[in-house]
Length: 303
Ligand code: CP
Image (cartoon, rainbow, N blue to C red):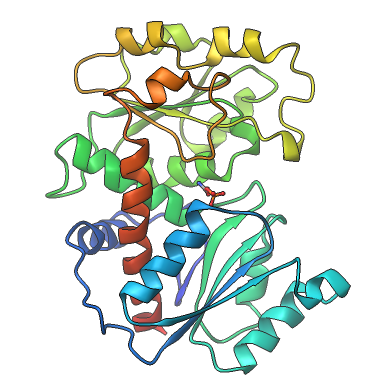
């Protein structure tokens, strides 16, 4: 999971490392001065609400200072490369870089050019490791697996614009490493059969999966990455692949509905389901702070 002191992806997730981090997050193990005197830089070259704010809150709760940089308002808008920008911020004496970028692979590239830890906060259609850890934290808590984080016997169904989704890729890597069975589901243009190479099943029939799922993870159509470009109608998509109230009523006892956000209510999920008793979406947001505290602390300890 870790690449030296960098947290870049979950494609080769290590179950022991993930379980150690999840335990620290679950126990909220670190105090308010754990990172006193340290500085964490948020380099967000793509928009974010949850990830950016939760990394900021996490670092502040550990006693670290936070500096924030985005493309707009920085010299990236004048043509400076991401690597030069990262070098520049590193040279000012920061202790870790939290990086979000629109380009798949950008975080790994930056990690090869700096000495401080790099934490991937989402890169293009590639990886979003702390979102997957956040989702695992909530799955473990909801299904009573927080002692060992062993997800054997759990069936996680990830639904929607999977091919565009870094969240899906990171979750497949992490959740299968923890023992879960994962099925990706969506229309063929958003969920091609080749995604089974990730080590999971692929289906185009959501209704065939609803009765068996322990976790339904709904994904947004990523229109900004070309997702849904050939979609005939959002209403038809909702009818075929949305988490409707009717489908939520068919879920088995204890099954949960997740969404990494941002949500498009009425497209991939009905508003009443997002706000209903099966939804753990707000818990996911809260858990994100705990996971990011553990990720920042472990990255700096490894550095
Ligand atoms: N889940 C997620 O990454 O949300 P943001 O884009 O708001 O950070």
